[in-house]
Length: 143
Image 1: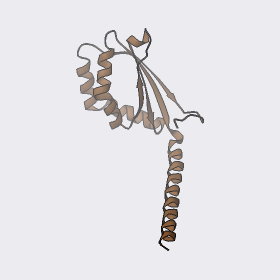
Image 2 (image 1 turned 90 degrees about the vertical axis):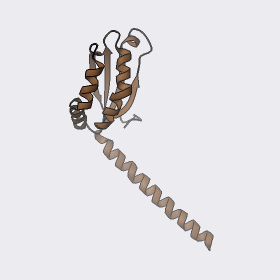
Image 3 (image 1 turned 45 degrees about the vertical axis):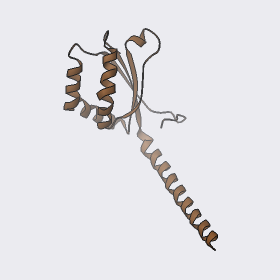
Image 4 (image 1 turned 90 degrees about the horizontal axis):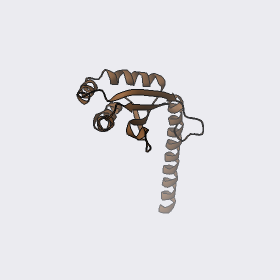
C-alpha cells in the first residue's frame, strides 16, 4: 500500500514538474520572440586596448547588467593587426526597443560618466565603434 501511494506521489510530482517545465519553455520562447542581439566591435586608439579591457572588466560589464543588457560574450582577435586594437562583444536584449532604452539609460548614468571621464584622463580609448543588430535564425541555439 505504501509503495502504491509513493508511486502515485512520484507520478503526480513528475507530471507537475513536466507541466511547469513545458509551460516555462513555451513562455521562454514567447518572450524570446523579439529578442535581439547586438554585435559591437571597438577599435581602440593606439596603445589604449589594455585600458579599454580594464574599463570593461572593472566597470562596463556590471553597468550593462544594471541597465538591462545581457552580456553574451567578449572576444579579442588572435591575429594582427586586429589583435593590437580590437574588442568584439555581443549583447542581448528582449527587443530592439529595449536595446534603445538600455543604451539611453547607460549613457546617462552618472557612474558611467565618471568612469568614462576617469578612464580617458590620458586620452580617448576608442577610435571607432561598429554596431550591428541581429535576429537569431530559426536554427540558432541562441534564441
